[in-house]
Length: 465
Ligand code: SF4
Image 1 (tube, protein in one colour):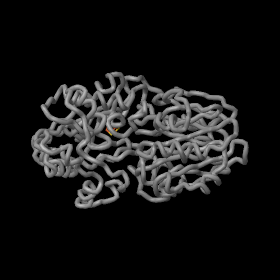
Image 2 (cartoon, rainbow, N blue to C red; image 1 turned 90 degrees about the horizontal axis):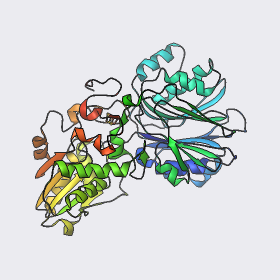
Image 3 (cartoon, rainbow, N blue to C red; image 1 turned 120 degrees about the vertical axis):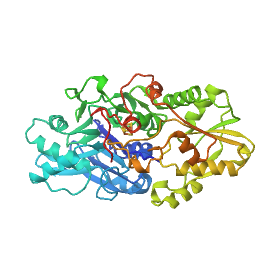
Image 4 (spheres, rainbow, N blue to C red; image 1 turned 45 degrees about the vertical axis):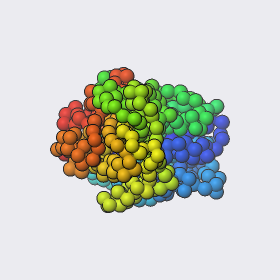
């Protein structure tokens, strides 16, 4: 399974109320974006400059924060982060938010994405005296902003100057002693939204986090935009880093898999996109069957789309035990296979004697698909037809998704027929690359680099990882 990158959340309550509990709820609703570590940093806009209270650790939000921890995190401005490591080791030191002290006070930062010029920047900063405590990109961004702050009038200007030097993907929330800032890279790889609740302003990776915290959706942060909220409640927008929308590169895999289906990203419902993917799968690759079912949870909505288009009843053939840890905690191949069986069980009575269309969001190494097809056959399925709501993964991702190296991808150097044979399915079809734009109504310029090798910021075939 491909893993999510990270989720960020930020809040400034201009009425002075504490924000930690809301940040906690926001992070809980973004937990699907990262389960390795999490953290919350808070401060008081009326308090002493640089007094930041921070707690971060390995684990889920509900494991890291208890009632006592939240009670200690007092302050009306705060940012939070959930992490799955795509750059930098999975350690407590690399957890976010990251807070640094410098001459102008304290700067805390939470980042979702991956810088493509991180090595270059690290070397450049190290040559001028920077000493790094972590191996994560976010520290580079924090250092850069702190340095630029010394030559600029405001922290938002320092963010704008830093963005000139950052390459790759980033959706950021930055907390300075008196301001909350949200910024998104000019290609808009990763989502970032703004909301409002009473006198509080909220930024979050996904709109579902606004719903959960009772904030009203205000708008998406535009690719390249910097939005600043002050402790007096003033809101400024700087769009000087924005590029023409035809150059944008929204990650299409956010719609297919990463994001929660109750989120709306850049004006397009994730749920709708998945329904449409399922419909196109049927339109382009129809098959006669008795039941359509998704591999839970991520294949369920595309399965519904396939069912609507085909009029084949939609049902459930696999039960997922949500209380088992995620597959990636088992590094070895056999560990991964066993985890599939621990997590999923067949609903024998729904499957016996049936021709099943099974919808999944992707096939990465093929191990899980093989295991699932076998489980369905063992449970008595007459036929198993796999339909995948994304094209085959063929290329790396440079923007914060852990697509494995090419040699490990089942589709690398194999035809679809060869993959079908490995999975053991009766038939196998993928969503066509030309349909990727269609699932979001053709309305956005997208990144589809891991499927095509063509990336928004270079627009040419990717280098092998
Ligand atoms: S390469 Fe793939 S996963 Fe990475 S940003 Fe582009 S579409 Fe998303």
